[in-house]
Image (tube, rainbow, N blue to C red; front, side):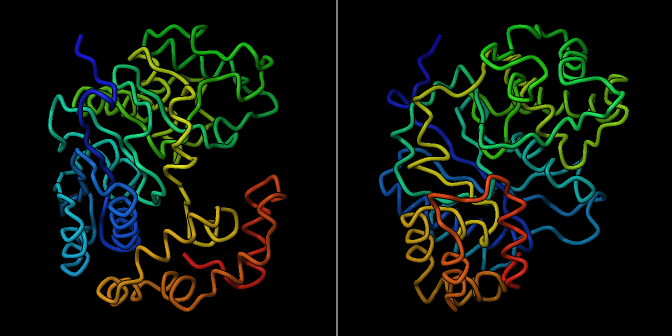
Length: 333
């Protein structure tokens, strides 16, 4: 088997760009990526959904956004969305995988990610896929008289003929959510995007259209991708990330989710990278059209949010952070 660790061969980086917020975030993604990875040996791809029956409006990015991305040597990849589209835009991360070069290792990132360190320092083992553990107990939501965590997750493993027991973290107690394999889909990787994408698509469609009865009371919007992802990763003999991947959601990449949350809880280095990478006038002229960037970054109001929180003693629940920002009328997205 070919050795696909990062120190032996290159790999591709992939995110989604489309009209609206994701187009502006794609510029932040590309700008910080190039700033933190000036000698990256692989390719940077921005997947772009194309107009079709599953979109009411044109999802393509503006010419100005495209020009900025191409200036950062990002390759824009068009793809079709026959299964998801506007009704479930999170499906872009699944259908977009089919546009990537077949047989070449890839790392997918959510577009609301920026970079503060070299990605080549991360110990990817592309034969053993993994994904982000920066998540909360969002799914499943356990009903008083319904199936518990174990029964819910086991029903899915059984549906796809997967071994449930080997997915468990036995250091966690029974019926505690962290015992069960669950990821944030903010990043994931594998040795081939087509192979991974086909299984991701198959599992997601089966869960959506023919799920086990244990899911009858569970919402799959927006959680479908995060329900399918651990099953896909487990099916390819992957699992929870080891210490070699600590730079993701750490010193190399930051999945900031929204600009208000970035200013509230992320490091000084992350804020400095954001503000420095998009400071040039050529970029500012385009990005200031997006209200959150205009007010929080270019008008400096993000630092008012920053002053509201102690990064060493943040509220345990993200919702508490959101509420405080909203009370200050600075929740811009």
